[in-house]
Length: 334
Image (tube, rainbow, N blue to C red; front, side):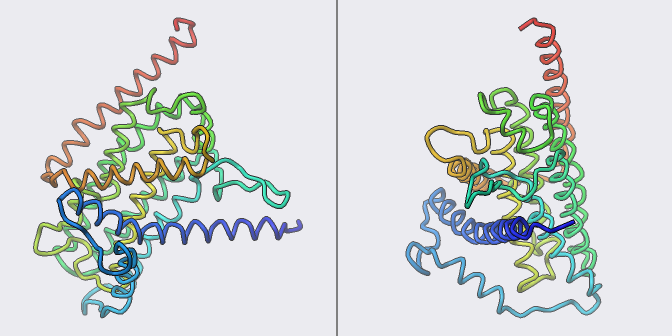
């Protein structure tokens, strides 16, 4: 079987664009968040390094790269080193099936603006993102630190608790779209975005996504209000930076999924599709930062109760209502 080298080159170039785009997006998302939180709290935020502080992410990256890197003496060194890479790899891979725009033609070829269109694309995303918790658990366990271990256990409990409403909230979307492919789900929203038809599912999915990304007010895994920092207490330099990057890229992925599943993806009038996608993406990132700036961290027992006693029942109720409405539609009632 002959290899289409041009197609292979296109795939490699798209993969590099996605990887570098997410890394650059992470860097300037930190700047965006610090500036925005500063405004919310009547402060300025970073404004000294470069115009409007735009070179602050570069300075932070250099600082993290050149900081002392150490491994605790009694740590499990192979797992200690691997754990941040696992967390980082999971969020990078999950973006591969997210379509950021319609197909375009370049040099006589049709170029799709995603790496892969899998017919069970959303299941792939959920499966890959769930692997990221291994980075948290292994990082906490391999550090040989009791506080780090507790942070890892918190992470496992939180991810298990919120993956259930995370997945259940999407069943109604799958029923309406008739597919699990993210591309098909976007195309099914050509007339009306699913946030109109599935508002309850959108709310449940968003809160579950915030918890899955370990973002405030669900950032109990990091334990920033304690004397230690949870699972990454023993990490420094580039290994700590990988955990930091994984959290912020998780926020980008969660926002992209929210846009794709409920806000119509690249659909929109007048502007090119990819422009609409990024406008909606920035809006969702703004909401993430807005929540962090205004909502206090909740207690751990309430974190668990929020999932099992509220989000899971609402997800199941949404499935029943959606199924009933589709049956009535097929019967010609409306």
